[in-house]
Amino acid sequence: MIRKKILIVAPFTVLPGEKGFNRFRYIAEELAMLGHEVELVTSNYSHAEKSFRQPDAEQWSEAALPYQLTLIEESGYKRNVSFARIRSHRRFERNLKLYLELKENKVDVVYAAYPLMGAAQLAGSFAKRLGVPFILDIQDIWPESINSVLKLPDRWLKLLLAPMTAYANQVYKLADYIVGVSDTYVARGKAANRKAKAYHCLFIGADQAYFDVCASRNVEVNKPMGEFWITYIGTLSHSYDIETVIKAVALLERTGYRDMVFNIFGSGPHESRYRELAKQLQAPVRFMGHQSYEDMIPYLVRSDVAANAISKGARASVTNKIGDFLFAGLPMINSCENKEVMKMVTDCHIGFNYRPGDYTECARYIALLFHQKQFSHQLGVNSRNLAESRFDRRKTYPELYKLILNT
Image (cartoon, rainbow, N blue to C red; front, side, top):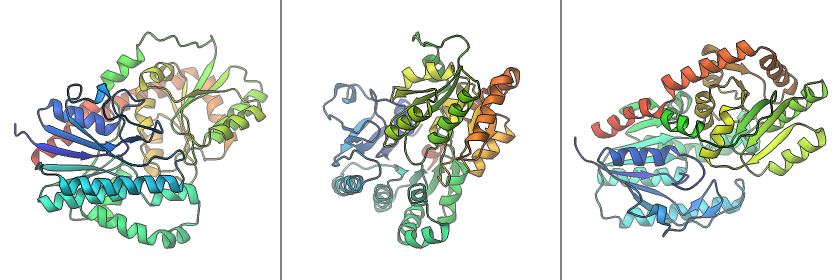
């Protein structure tokens, strides 16, 4: 096997010891284990934890990691939607530009996450300067996703975002190879760049072996007999339609369902609003906070329904939480309007699609799953089968490693 020097630029990655299990850290580890020389370039500020990383932390030392870790300085921010975040990312991009300009070590492949747009553009330009392949991994279709915040009519949005869209298209055009977390995102990249050598959909997924280890951990999960758990995992922000599920379980509670509980794992800018709504409606909701992947999975596998609660107008597609929902063997209620996700839910028989904001429809599907135990169980079996065939990183990611080796 040819040993390659691979540069991975991923501003939002999750590092060992932090809560979560990120795609780019996983790829860096696996490529290093395959014998490649890997450098993972990320931020000194954790987007998920909203805290600064200590560069001398023992778990990130050269001895502890199989790859080289480089932390690029940014200023940090507390709110995801804020001018402070824009300033912080700009600082990251300026420092990344300087780092790449001074970088002397030759690399054979540059692999970058998108977004950040600016960071991906710098990585692509660096690859072009060296004359090496550039692989772009589309995690989100920015700037289109901004409409989940602005909620403007499409015609106005296109006009307002035209300069950013033109810039995004230039970034896509830098790619020699386009990878994306869904067919939807790959298609967006392909629309801007039809000259790439290959296009590949690679779901974020999960590592089946590691998921099952976490699921079987000896963790005390207090689930009273007869309780029916609907579980959400993720950020509590504008893109996620948590409000509808809270209203749905409140409606069910009022109509006689006494054993239903909505478990929310995560944190975010809208948490206080959701807490107030749950209190106001006397809804059976438990806010579980932002927990580690290892501590969260035992709760997820003991749940009865997974809630893929996505807001109307959000441009989300096959998100990272879907892989965990499927591996947990749960039926899914889904409000994501992305056609690829909706088709997966119906064609693979893993749950129900409901309209975002329609809490009566959401409640109806939860009640159906509560009453139809055998049917619900079969949907869960279908979920696990789908996970094992299309979402297991051990089976799907080797295609990416092969792509990198053959560039």
